[in-house]
Image (cartoon, rainbow, N blue to C red):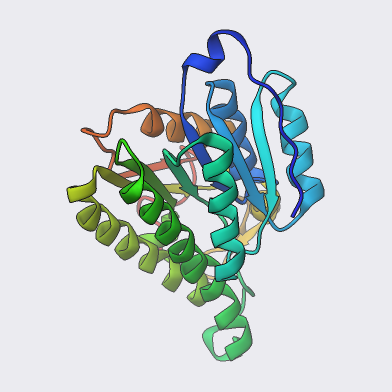
Length: 262
């Protein structure tokens, strides 16, 4: 575990709350972490790579309040330590952006090994559950009670791509996780929503720009959008009072083949 923190000064100290962002070392997670930090949140950055988390903290700037915790979200002990550190750093847990995820191999179902299947399930579903469980526990026990969990789903929570059985199955399952957390959180002022993203420009989606398999068998490039567009949406969800919740929202590159694809 490594950590890096920065003092927060001035007006920023009066905004935001205490947030945990998983997958914060790159892509959407980094963009969301930077947006929250700029809005005055105390942000605990979680991810596998300590050096990538340190870079996110550096990009947040000297006036941001961040701490970095190298975390494997598939490890229950590591996740418990993450939230223990986050609670000490921020004083409480107001927000979890449950973002860590992996695609798995882009091959037909009969070519997916059990090990490859389990690897995707462990990160995308079990990891999301483990983080949500710790956040839920902290939000339920803290005073004042409550907080918000935002799960990163995917357009694949609605419509699969070819050769994506493990990813698609886990993202459909994340929708069930979101609904259950939302229901069970009601008595404790815990709100839970989900953002389903299409083609944010990140390392994970770089292949979309050069050509990706379509349902009709063709391989064509797909448009993408800036990950900061996703971050602005997450920030809007996070800024709502706990009496209001965005249950599901879809943010996608306008011209990508989603509506009517297949």
